[in-house]
Image 1 (cartoon, rainbow, N blue to C red):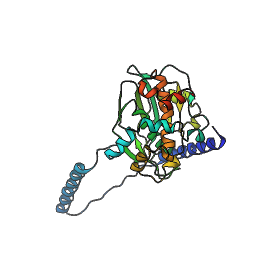
Image 2: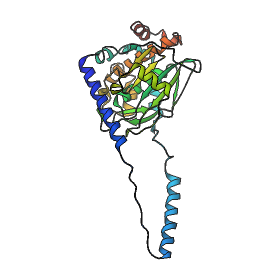
Image 3: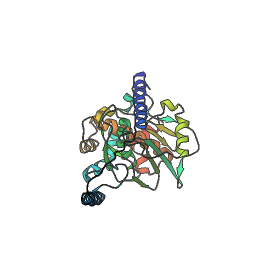
Length: 295
């Protein structure tokens, strides 16, 4: 990884750590309402309060973190059906010009789930680098199975590459004959806790990124054989809508496809390595076989 890229990544991690610390220091504020007056007024206030609470209970969204915005069918289709011909044309795309070592070889017991090789992702909804890589993960994973639902969010408005249009994997599911996918969205867009890592997931993360001060998002482990963080420049997504990004994935000449599809091809090559090159229709394509030779 070049010095400039390392510095940029370190700076991003420092901002992430600062945001997390600020969120944890936030205090919960309580307000107290004082009622007074005659018995009639008190009863009126109580009745009004009950009516308002019941109304709010019927109209408000379910309690819990925001799960994102339902995306138009056209966006879902564009993300999940990027043609093999487009991906082959893109190949490595702009990835090699962004990071010196896109994929790191790692060793450990095979990472599996329910008898299938597993890909583990740990990220956060506020993280702009996760925002970029989620598009690539969605493209790659769709070549091996079905990721649903696809919901849209924007990264933090106060971090680098603010308000990047992206997806969230919170409360998503993945169905595949070849691969298990485990996403952990650790924090919300507001940097508040969302999903906790298990002890086993935390141990994996700590093993391959042992310096806690430098441990950041995203973290992607493909079967305990390959590790990735972010491998293309989120700047190519700046100012774009979900629809514009999804459509650009089909244009191999676009900067978005060069970054997003290029990263998706690296992810696909790693996945093919742990699935014994199945399905063959994906893993024997020209772009994937070329990148597998570089892993």
